[in-house]
Structure formats: structure tokens, C-alpha cells
Length: 461
Image (cartoon, rainbow, N blue to C red; front, side, top):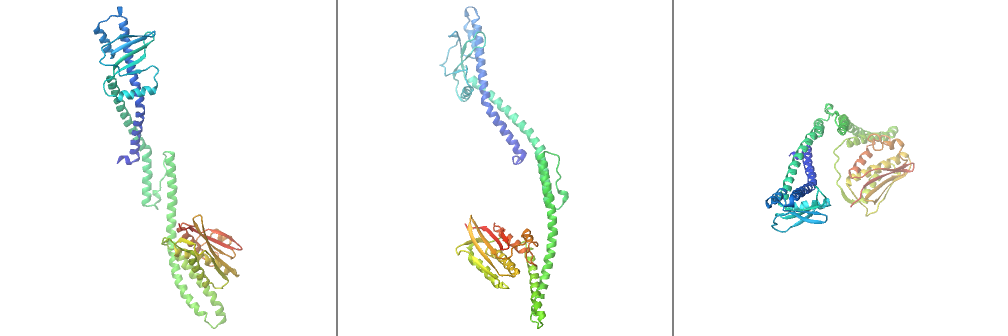
């Protein structure tokens, strides 16, 4: 439909607004027309009375008197001079006067109210109109007349206003319609066409819009669109290169992991060698191979973009944390790390248990490895609490703290690793998992006395 378009709606609104404006001025206009009509009757009645008074002895025939009244379109004419009221011209009254209107000093509201009443009153009433004489000596004048001719004249005048209003509305709306299409719709359509063409092939730089010379607002919009398209095209090209590079890295990591796994099996046999030097070297070799395999596995995990959405449920938090700490306690190589949980048994979490298990395992393992790398004993404590509609799980250790470089690149892949041989992917993956729960994983504090991370997620409702 035409009114579903911008120019069509503008056309319709223009017509509506013009009609509303005409309606608002219709009543005052009709009121003014009514006053003019009645004042004309008063003037004609006064002229007829003056013609009568100018005759010798003020004597005229009945036929001439009736002709004067018919010319003035009134039934009676009375003059008031020197506080004396005199009926100058008269004819037989078919009935008494129905209503009197005094135009002397009447307010605009009174006049408009009278016009509306005349407009919507049926029948042919007889009305008396009182006014001021405007010819000859000053005084008052009264005339009586039928109301039906007045109403007919007002209706005819109203119809003329209506037709004129419609013509003005249509002409104005048409002009505005073509103006809007020329100066607004056409430039907007140009932007839409460029966006559609760019959508079909965003990597084609020739489809990027070039700002025109139209209005300032449209030029600004086209400039912003061009900047966005340039940035998106560059990002898509970079994404393609990174995707190709990531695919190559994934293939290399997969093959390298298989080779390293085989090498690790062979290294396990070396540990049983009778040569003391070989037995001393074998653990270092096995650890190096384990770190290399871990690097390959983390790289492959990070390269997966099909991480499922979390399946949110409400469950007790203490058992899950206990399982995480028990696993890390058994995996601790040196036994120098103490694992503790400080969680109330009734505290519940609203999350995906498997994903939260991975997040906490990553944080606890990083903390334990940092303590073991320092060469001194320490502890990892997992505590939790609830407040302000959030559940906050704190993982604190007594390790050496994070160095400045690690803090700067904490959540950047392949950049935020703390320990030697680390990839920096663990925290990145953990942060993404927490973000998928509508939460965050900030670094609360880090110093020589230890480091604390907080898993901040929405609390159960």
C-alpha cells in the first residue's frame, strides 16, 4: 500500500493536519460570516427606515413598505434614538420572536456559540437582532427576520470552506509528497541500495558507499556507513586469513599431538633404563612432552567455535567444588599445595555444572601450578557467597602473584600465559564460558602474597 511508504505516510499526515487546521478555523470563520450577514441585514433595515423617514410626512404605501422590508430581508425595523424606541417598518408577524441576539459588545465566545446554535437548530425560527446604526445619527436598531435563510447561507459558506480546504490540502500534500520523494526518500533509497549491494558481497570494496553532496544529516549517515563498511570489509578479510591460519595450526597441532603422544610412550620406557643419567633426564623429557601435548590440546580446544550453549540448572555448589579440589589434590605432583573449600552446604548456583566445573578446574589448576613453580608450599582456597542477586565464587592462592606482563595480556589468547610453556588459553576459555552465563571473571587482586580470581554469575531466583 502507498501509505506504508515514507512518502505515502507523509502525504496522509499532511492532508490530516491541513484538515485539522481548517476545522480549527471553521467555527470562527462561520461565526464571522454570521455576524457579517446579520450586520448587513441591520444596515439594509436602517437604509429602508431612512428612506421611509425621508418621505414627506413619513407616509408610504403598504406595497412600498413591504418592498423595503423584502429588500432588506427582514420582517420589522425599529430605531432607538434619544432613548426612544420607534417601530419604523413592520409587517404581520406569523408568530412571536423565538430568540434575541444582541451584537453590541458581544464576545467572540458568545458569537461562536450563537453560530453553532444557528447551524444545528432546525426549523425556521424568527429571531430579533439588535445592533448599532452605522448611517446617519448614532443610535440602536432592531430587526426581526427568519433564521432559515441565514442557516442556508451559513451551510453554503461552510461547504465552500470545505471544498477549498480539500483543494488546498491535496495541493499542499502533493507538493510535499514530491518534495519528500526528491529530497528525502530518494537519498534514503540510495543508501538502502548500497546496503543491499554490500550485503550480497561485503568483501567487494567497489560496493562500499561513497558519501554524496546532499543534506548534512544524510552525508553524515553515509559517512558513518562507509566507515562501518570499510571496517567490516577489513575485518572479514582478516577473519579469512585468521581462519586459514587457524585451520593450518589446528592441522599441525593435531599431527604434532599424535607424534608427541607416541614420543611420550617411548619416553616412559626410558625411565626404566638402568643408566642413572638416563633416569635423571627422563622425567624432564616426559614433562616437556606433557607440556607440548597440553599446548596442542588447548590450541585445538580454543579453535572450536561450536561450544554448546550452557544448560542452566540450579544445583548445590559445595559438592561440585569438592570434586574439583579432590581431582586437583590427586593430580598434585609435589604435594606442596593444600586445597581448601569454604562454602556453605545450602549455597546453590545457577549455571551449567559441566562448564562451571571446567572453569573452576582451570582456575584451581593455574593456582596450584603457580605455587609449585615457586618452589615453596602454599594453599588454594575456594570460597563463595551470594549478594545483590549475584553468586560470587572466589579462587584465592598464596602463590607469588602475577607479573606485570601477564596482567596486561591476562585474557588474550596465546599472550597471557604465566608459567613457562603455558599457552594463555585457559583463562580465555574460562572467561568465555562465564560470559555465556551472563557473568564475568575479573582478577580481584594479585600481589606477592597471592592472587584471587572471582567467578561472578547471576544468583538463583
